[in-house]
Image (cartoon, rainbow, N blue to C red):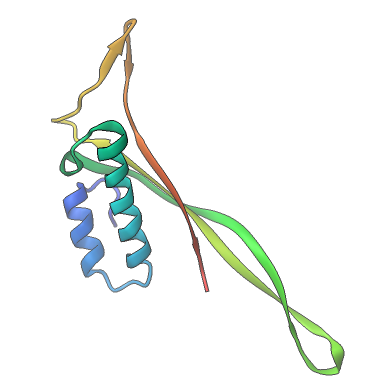
Amino acid sequence: MIRGKSVVEARVILSNVGKKAKHPLGDLLDSAIANSKHNFKIDGENLFVKEIRVDQGYVLKRSMPVSRGSAHPIKKKTSHVNLVLAPNAENKRSKKRNGKEIKKQITNNKSISKK
């Protein structure tokens, strides 16, 4: 829903969507904006969501005791969320060194557990 949107539009979409994951994704977006301001001195309002990807994380393996001394397996799955922000096309500032263009990308990873 938020891929390709500006940061302001992505915040509005995440605040109004009725999904359970809106709070962790909103926190991740705020964290990525703060990282861009602190680490790269890029204004957070001139960014857009270039890529957002949810990959499978590690699995916690537990067991639940049941009758007759046996156990049923329980798998607690987690996710890795990868969010990449980039400057807008009209405000894109790229540095050239030795004839090569270097673009800054802000990447933020966060592990979210599913219950």
